[in-house]
Length: 233
Image 1 (cartoon, one colour):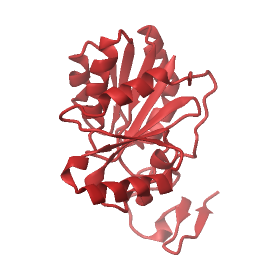
Image 2: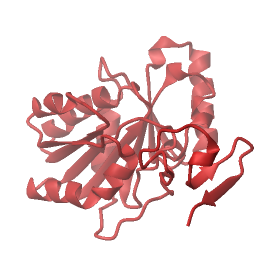
Image 3: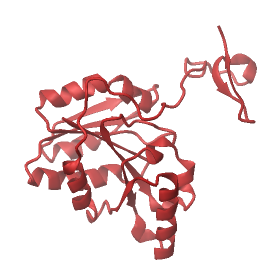
């Protein structure tokens, strides 16, 4: 089975691009399943279900959605196997810009909004720099010069990625994305590893501490000057 992980910034159009892409894959008799990971709420599974695609929703609630999806990878893959799916497409929640959801044998797709500014590709982390494909949305809302600058910034951050310009409303770019998904040779294994370490989530705030001030906190901490330390047993 082929494992497709779609990540990106909030509001970039991940779901809209995916729906157009799934329509094309379904026309080609591909059997996909979709897993949607979000934080507190999502009605996107209803949109996927209208296509006749098996879909599962996971809500991370108080847990980092990146950690949630990684922790539940086995269950997610098992869901797709039960559906006899050829492809499992997992859409993760855009959150901290330091997400690192891709596994070694997945096809990593990053969806990023061109209106977010020319420096945004340098501000985000492994979900762009480790992606196989970067999908640029909302390019019709900026000038040609701005699009070229944005594209070059992406290539500076991830020189080996394939770039697709897409439109979540018209479906532009969905055919190219569907072709790349269908032609990927990567096959998920029983012993998957992350391409990049996930964001840290080891501190007393993660355990529910509400008091403000360094003296109240333990765990893996980073100071304003960039120094990182572990405080605790």
